[in-house]
Length: 494
Image (cartoon, rainbow, N blue to C red; front, side, top):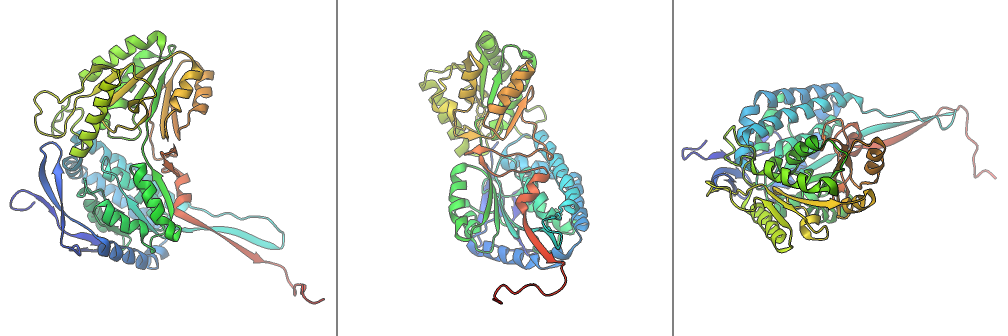
């Protein structure tokens, strides 16, 4: 902390050193609960990104690439332990940056450590294979690092989603340049400090907070970067892909969703209600995988909608530091304004406002809004089809299975979906038809390090998590050795 109480991180982490930014500029991070500047963080520009990429490229041929995979795994495991040991401090920094309740960010620190622990164990299990295509040839594959990975992070869960990328990238032997979001620039620099303490060699991890249009663009277009892993809005992903095309960078994107949550009349309604409220409003609705639209079979529709509104009205909105708070403020004024615009669209479209829609009583400062529930939403409206990224739930009735499958698939997104039913055949049948990368039955959003995660359509390209993700951080090299003896026949002899 500085003398005036500001949290100050005025240096970037490049090549194992803490260096002043090329421009000397800083990012002023706003505390969403107070709307006041709480931190000054170094801002990277194009020159800083270039230096970071060069450091990462140099590290590719350094001790990291020659290190036994099990040793890389041990370093990752040490980093996981350090995150756990420093979880409270990390959680408080993250909460000041993005507005989540500390009790939520504290849980995310443990989950981040769990992700790294999983990929620490994966480091020495990235195997090639022998291919018996001829008896006189030995053919086999090697899995090699893809190279320098540029990781562009979102603002809703910076440390957790950083570890989703950092774990497999480092386990596979890659090096990284990480750009945190400008809205939440502080916490990933703390991860850099812990990576250094864990024994990650210089240049393997580089952290450069900066603005997307400057640092992000420089990273996406840099010819020394081999792969971009991005989480955020699909519009940004499209721009990244265009920039990455100049040197055919590999790209994986996780780009949001408008998750359908289907409740059939034969479901365990109490269970479905509990999960629906949690899945719609946690993290102030600022998660791409939350159940932001609920379809309820008509015989139970009215009671379900009324009950979910009652429960939503009981959600405690408040200061992130208060242990009694359920959800905090939006991360930014921009995101609050976006949520408010969709609430207004809901009012204007004729949907029935059951609860919320305004600022919580007693919270005159901060980017707060009440948990909001609309019923009788027209499924063709923007509220029903576009991602709000705020605590706004749209509820709609349906009559038939065929109808609700069509409604569930009627957006440009396809990240997460779920359904509640006691009919086993229907569960499998509907799950197979929902156009989402993750579909759950009688639960919602079981995101886990062992489960592949990613979307269809505008929700992204590729998958994160599980051993499957190692394919996206490695190149496959095929090697063929001729085992035959003697001189081969000269095809040009005759």
